[in-house]
Length: 529
Image (cartoon, rainbow, N blue to C red; front, side, top):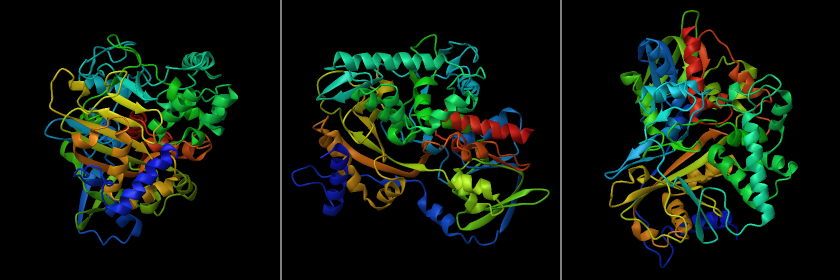
């Protein structure tokens, strides 16, 4: 039985049994959490009552994820305070939210930021504002606050009963496989420096700054798996790494990921630091929540949570949004509106949306995700090999592994820790993944996760005191072949309207902090004229 089938079989058996298997410890308590599907279904079903109150604002920003927060952050930096951010969930942050236990903070989603290159100027501006980037934000190799540089060891991988340092397995490989690994690394190094016929880098962050050379953009029509095979890369460990990268960043199997997007993962990062290796990442116990808080601070009390936008209408003088807040509907009138929520929602609320744009927005495909936080009373038993790392990855596993919330607090002797487990439901269709997230009880997910983890940590059931599961049915837009440069995404990214601006990582075709922030800043700049 494959690891995928074993995981789903364990989940299914636990769902039927209603408890842990015989002979195993009772499942720990916890909650089944997720995006607010109740409000989401209210939007799907339609029928908001008339507004009972009218509020006015200069710029109305719909969506309090990274792109919406970035739009507000940029407006505030330019001296504008006449804006309001509406967020459907109980708190802003989107995929970068975190949690807090009595022991430590922990992430619910995105958990790291690679060192930004000079092209990611808005990321560097934010980091400098937060005091994490020290000195000139435009410097090639700036210095970073060591508290945010991921402590060593940064990552390890579990394979054949042993832990190895790094992400690409080395132990027991043939000369041929090692040679392919070296050739792959050399090719990625070349692509990092390569430029298209227009003089731009082939793969840049933000992706909009990448070369427009049609020869290279044609890679979007291939899958990443096919690109590997076409270029003579057949080594199993390389195919595993490529698939892991696509599952990790895009929630998508590499056989269903655009080759351009797959290469972007490996060839776009060029950040350096004066006090860290180039592959070091920035992180904190609660993942990227510190970045979301940094952006949100600029908006302050102008963020309204629990707010569902149900209807958008235009007039010559304003754009209005009818918003369900609690049990009443508030009408917001604004001179301009920034749509920073996922794009597939916009056609449901904007009746006058142009048909071609509506089609493009609805064509996006979204990856379902599962995240779990395991609260441990003590450290679990370790297998042999490399010591515990921040990112702990399993080679033959349906999950992506786990990150350790206390790793950045390595100098403190804490009585326990929190493991954040990640699972992209890449091995079923997105619709089936969403159905599984909707219908599977927490205890079934918990049993599947613990069964997977105890292959590596045999006593983990005895260590876990709480296990919370978070579901996200539309976690990120999937960069499937043909989706990046096939017309629809470009149409959305190039959309211009006197009052309505689009801002979301969907406009880039995949979900990264840098992309979401960039799209938010561009929308804010468009509002400023």
